[in-house]
Length: 285
Image (tube, rainbow, N blue to C red):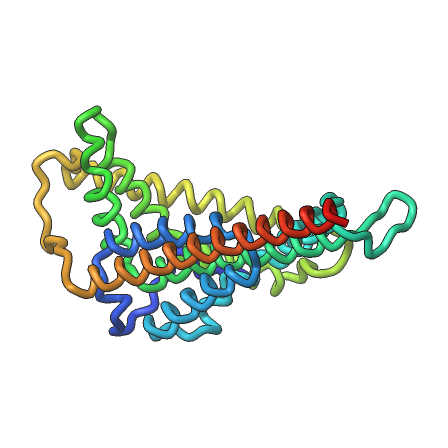
């Protein structure tokens, strides 16, 4: 179960996506999220999914490794699907029984929400798979550096993000070891209802939290013993620089957003014109 979580894990391979500046990848992720949310039609959303598949192919990360990020959402996705399916009442009624009503608008919205969630999770997963935590933190700190004018703790925020991403795989590995140890002692973690299975997770969560606090204390002592005092006056081993491949990535992403906006506006205009013509014909008759 824990091996399916790919957030914070890095897939080491040489690819055009791996060679991009971390600032570029962070900005591209924000633009990608904008493209996901501004899309109102599924057929236009297909271009966004094709872009994600193209980036996955260019990153040389196996598609099966990227889709692992969806497995932990196996309970959230059906819940969101059913919630939108039964709550949206627009469109033609397909099925009705007592208080349960399924409409075409509900089916459309439920499918669209699922696709959006999958696109968002795979996009964030691809970012961490192609960027080391240190590079990701450096890129975030450089992007947020203008906030230092208002005394915002940019370096501290970036450091917390580095530590969090660095220890996600470690904690997952430790949780897997604890689970195997409990199973070897005869613990039953799979059978029973939801409440029973949640109660059976306590012997795993308690030692995991204890070990997490112990690691945090050891890390704090190690930083204090090395006289860590924040980002003031610190130098860097590698200086981030933009290259031509970063510009090409920006242009491709900007072209995707422009295409989505143009197609959406064109489709809306055509819909409005068709409705207006239909109304005129009806009035003439």
